[in-house]
Length: 114
Image 1: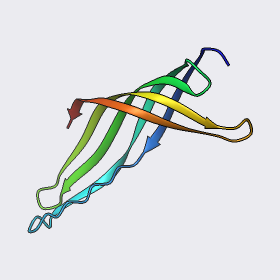
Image 2: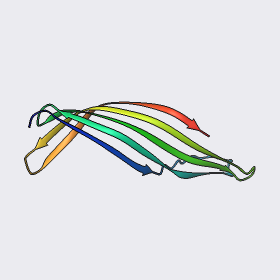
Image 3: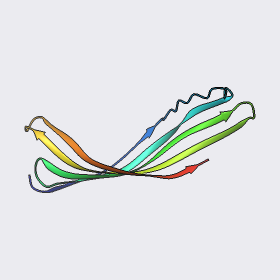
Image 4: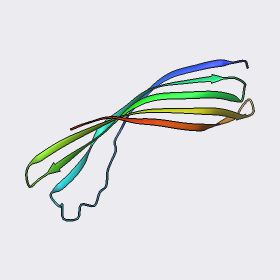
């Protein structure tokens, strides 16, 4: 195998849950709202067993806060940008192959909407 590019798109949904002890804040409830992720992935293989991989993806993590005593409801939408950069190692034979990705990660909390 000679040098080769791999490029792809991905997306999905998620449900994040938060668990916080409120003590005397018994009137507060937190519910989960669906979020999502979309991204682009790319990999360049130098050799049969060695390549470099980079992903760029945007995530939305959401939840609601409700205060039953004062009838207020807040919806939080957090947006994150994540960029992992990895060396990709492949090992095994022709019928069964494994891989390992080793590298660093950069992330940015883009926004919080209330």
